[in-house]
Image (cartoon, rainbow, N blue to C red; front, side, top):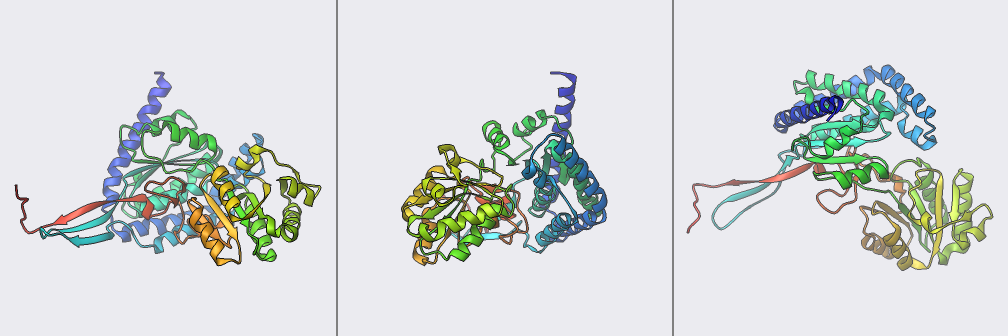
Length: 425
């Protein structure tokens, strides 16, 4: 091992050890103390806004020099409004109930023992993320409120922004009387640090949460030696069913695709029922094209507008994260569900329909983390779900699914109370 790798390993193991110690303190911290740290952090973000935005401008200039594209630049960018949104998200988390110590269930058994299932923190959470400086604050806040220490590793694209946001939390924790190591950041672009986190840092990391592109998430899922909350792709669908109102359908489809094209909840495929294609297909495609979206479609879509290019098989699997959408005409609910089942990634799907029975069938039959009726897929967000913020979207089926918020960042233990009982032989 080279001297550089040895020094990095020492640094990373120190982070893990410090996080483990901090997690023990945080697990028993009062709700008032945790909330004070979050309010302090929101105040610090506002007070240091000018410096954070200046650091973000530096990140943007470096990203522009790398020609990363408009969607990535949008994810990186912070301005006054977005920074205020981050501060407000912290304050929204303060208003949520503290999950730690919550009694999930309680019962008594024949032996007279009283048994309670009680929420407890997971411990130390490693968050590995790309291109989104707001994740620095969201992840730190959710982990703090749920009693978990966190090790943050943002990509080099946002290292200047993330460094200053993390510094706000360091000051906030100290002012609240909590260990500043409750929130730590890996302040190096060396990718070897990611591998060390995935290996668990000598069993100090309990869970890894990746937020980023397919390359990052794929690596994490393949190499991690600790549990992972993640989704690999956000191939989200909107199905416009035969009974849908065209005005509602147009507004939902354009918003689902174009509000922010670079987020994982952006729609990537539009399915239009054949029974309403004559009235709905052309205006939906025109609305997308007029909004600046490139449309790739099947023969029906191409025939409706000469500006539509031919979709190929890969388009149905594609997470564009850009102003591009694939369009297909399907014969009814069964084919729509079959298409989503085959090509989808299990993230978020929506049906636009005035038929309550068909909408209910869609919500029941589509096996994705989030299913919606008459709403834009862009609502696939923990903040929009009333969770204050999210640490990510999980599409797995164990422990956490959908937006990962406070409750999903806890486990549980059993507290058993007796009066001297012993178990008979």
